Length: 293
Image (cartoon, rainbow, N blue to C red; front, side):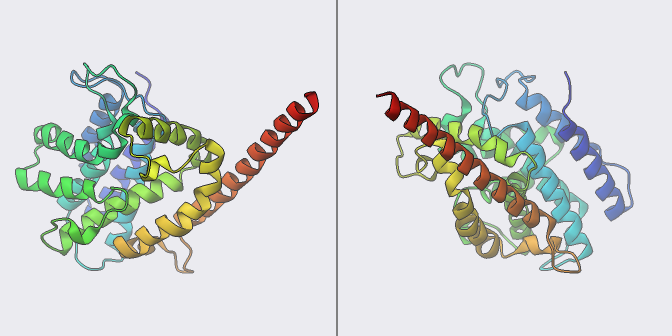
């Protein structure tokens, strides 16, 4: 099966930064995890169907994982709170790679798409990590740490309520949660993928019947596009600064610029232009209908 560019780019990134950080070329475990993730999301394992969600897919997983690896490399250059060993990197990478597997449907699940699991996908991802990762050599305690890091990606997570046992475990979780958010919103194709995210939200709302859930607040694609800037300035900024304690700032350069934040702001500008264009087209359709009547 054809491997997308993100597969090769993320694999190369992990290989390079691990070699720079630890003076080794052995990156077999992260590479094996990425290959396993590709097979998992493309239905090449016995238990699961191919991923059928329009946004939370293998591409998103690679975007999030690349951001986590960038954060790990930056922390290595500018350590704070606590130091991290190579095994800690592997725990963080494993958590990132498994963090959205909760959207995958098992073989006998024939109704709807995996988007219906939006409200419980984090818990399902934790179960999948527990079931799937022992074959990669992770111990029971390491699986617990991976599960906690996956929980750090939950919408409106309260990090103080997760059972981290020490600052090292907390930091792994914060890096994974931060990487998930940065990788998503800074992705080059983020504006174009928002239509897929809206479709996921719509199905999740219908399936869960949770009309006040975060994924149920958008009544149309235009509504979602218009709300993206507020989503960033309100929710995302709060999560980055408060829950994950500003760990994203380790990516700042010597001038205080952060390439992920810069790309997010560029994406928000593009999303606003898309919203204006869509609204203009909608007004033209309404006007033509009015004139026709």
